[in-house]
Amino acid sequence: MARPFSLLVKPAGPDCNLACTYCFYLSKTALFGRQIHRMSSAILERMTASYMATEQPVYTFGWQGGEPTMMGVEFFRNAVALQKQYGRSGAQVANGLQTNGTRISDEFAAFFAEYNFLLGVSIDGPPELHDRYRPYESGRASHGEVLKGVDRLRKHGVEHNVLTVVNAHTVEHPRTLYRYLKDLGFDYHQYIPCVEYERDGSLRPYSIDGARWGRFLCGLYDEWAADPEPVSIRHLDALMQHALGGPAAMCSLAASCRQYFVVEHNGDVYPCDFFVNESMKLGNVQTHRFGEMWQTPLFRQFGRMKRMLPVACSECEYLSWCRGDCPKHRVSGADNPVAALQSSTEPPVSTLCDGWKSFFSTRLPDLERQAKHRVQVQ
Image 1: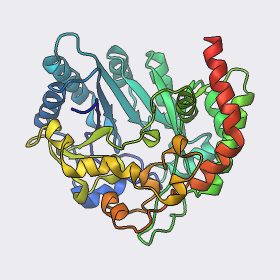
Image 2: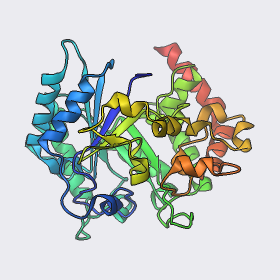
Image 3: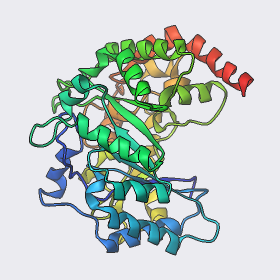
Image 4: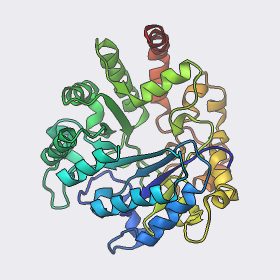
């Protein structure tokens, strides 16, 4: 292996009890069919054994969906048992799980606490913001049930953070989001821009553009910087680490896209959950080893996408900070990003480019000072 990698596992595929308007993964039923999707014990064992046979400083399993808790507690008990069975003496294993929070029972919370799972809970702010795009399939609001799940996690002492999607509705409220989530007791925030495309390349109604992303970032940063006891914000932490000469702490800030493998419920493997489609399939855990898939031409080409930049990016003073942004934001919904970028006479810039420039041009000097200050006080 050229370098360590993690697994992002989708044991229930696109299945979810919520019907979030902006969810890009619900549409994967077109690829996998509309039947119930569940990872079998045989595929779970094969995936785990294959991964634990590789050399990793830490074996990292990220359980996502859809909604991964739809698998039930016993599935994850089996997953941990297999990690123990196939792990070598002294091996470190980390489990993280991203959830909508509505299905967290006391049994689940106790299990997560026992095995030190890190939970990410999706909350898009207070009810009037969250419930706009995150209803149950029936249309019923989900915010109250999410908070009940958070309460159970805290009752059992489960480490958890919050993930917020910055969509066309929430993008206008950076200060409200920051304050609300902090007041709820979340010390670590992730803010993910919603950029989804129609087939013609136009943005879908719930998506944001660069100008709105820039205003959001600046507003969020100002609220964070003025806070005498600021929380950790993933993207700001990653940028400050970069300011201090550290390695990329997020795949979107890295020089290569080869960071992890996505393993679907049926064992199919892909390079990124944004590009789970037939043209990007690398293999299947039942027939391919991870080392083999790492060396495939498709995965190598996928990793090199970050270098397929337009002249505007190559000449930009902020290139070392954004690395051209996530390729998903540059290919306007193409199923095969490698082919899309290779066929372009001039690769496109990110949809969010103007926003990043607005943020870096006005807030970067202060961010660098904040980074140096952190080092001095530690």
